[in-house]
Image (cartoon, rainbow, N blue to C red; front, top):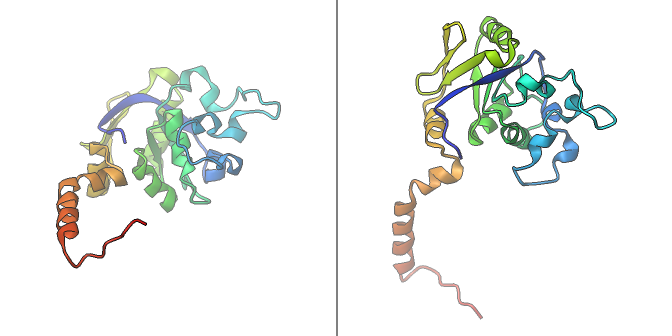
Length: 206
C-alpha cells in the first residue's frame, strides 16, 4: 500500500448527500477481485450517458477535474452495501483523500485499509472547501496527515481527528498484510520452534 503523508492536489466538488456504494461502483462491475481497472467505472451511471458517451455535466468529466486526487462530498458518503470495490474504484481513478461531513462506517473503515484518507469536517468547513474546489485547477488543497491539517488556498487551516493506529498505517503504507509482515522475524522464529517440537503432529505425504 502506498504511503500517505502530504497531498497537495486539485479537489473535485461533489455536492451530493447519501452517495451510496452503488453510485460509486455499480453492482454489475463487482465480478472481479482485481483492484485495477475499476477506476474506469467509477460513478459509471453519473459519468456516462445511455449511449456510452461521457456526460459533460458530471464533475469528473470536466477538464480541470480529470486529475483530481481529492473529492469533497456531502454527508453520509459511502452508504449502502459494504462492497470494498468502492474504495478500490476511487483509488484506481486517482482519488487519495475524501472530505465530507460524515461517512458510512463500513466504507470509512475500508478506505483506511486501501490507502485512502477519509477526513470528517463540519458542514461549514466542507462548504468552504467545496467553494474552493469549484475554482477548478487553480484551487489546490493541501492535506497534511502528520499534522492532521487541511490548508485552503487562502491559507486557512482546518484540523481533523484521526485514530492513532489508522494514522500510523497510512503514514507507513501498511495494509493488513504489511502489518503482519512487521512481525515477520517473530513469526519465523515461532514456526521454527513449533516445527522442532517433537509433539507437533506431522503431515506425511503419500
